[in-house]
Length: 398
Image 1 (cartoon, helix red, strand yellow):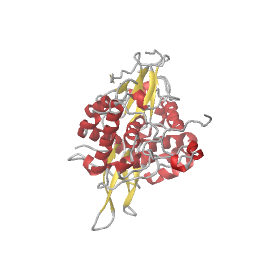
Image 2: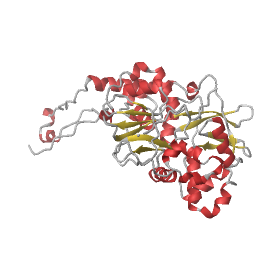
Image 3: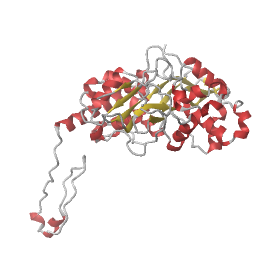
Image 4: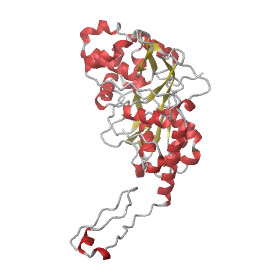
């Protein structure tokens, strides 16, 4: 049975020639008149208007001259048609539809020690779990790798309290956030029968990569956690079921400006795990590309890679190098996924359909790092690009 909140066996990305550190092989999958002119009307606002100069003429002679609009190219029209098709699909399908026929769900009690919760995640091969407040019989949030990173930050800021770290319970997570000055992530959930579009919008607004499905038990009128769906699972669901729409998305990554290409935080194989964790915290990111001195991609260090590093409360392991930490990945790790700026969006959806992908590393022909594309970038583009008034219910972009 499959756990919706599990690590999704390396759907993740990664990055890679340097000699400073032990070379950790990473598998790559690529995709390869003085009156100024009036502005053109925005799409959806092509209403008749009167040019300023017409006020100087007799009223009976005034007439409106329509401003010609630039016709869309066939590729632009297909792109818009494809995006509309995807959004309509997300509006008619529910979050419940994304769930597999069978799955397991591990819910952790808020009174559980954080140390024990880490062991449970590792033993079950998952990287997150819903939290439950047994005192109030209600959903209490979601435990993720970010919570363990916050714990590490606490350990670094208050080393004199190291003996207390192992005594913290999951209910202490919000106290830890306040102690280190971190703004807590908004606790979001969605009813399983609500449109999938709503679940996507809520995730993007809260910067969450997964969202719990919470229902109400009609007999007890209490909350019950049904499952957890991730951005990966949603995009996979889209890619598998809407090929007739994704095949229309023929514009390239460069043309649609998909991803991040400036101020990308990077690290070397010889950097310590703690240094990379600090980069994640400072830049508010969940993955750091690992490059050599020539900016050639070697691998990617993800937030979930922190979990094995602190197994059993071994915080001293944080001084280990990134190369050593990445060597602890499971044997079935599928490697990182790459693309280039000239790759089309439809090819990215093909990769999502066929593989487990969490992000794409954008490279050039010589494997130099150019940018990063997250699943959030793809979802945000699908949901909020070129939305027209006739598309119905609309959730504003974050």
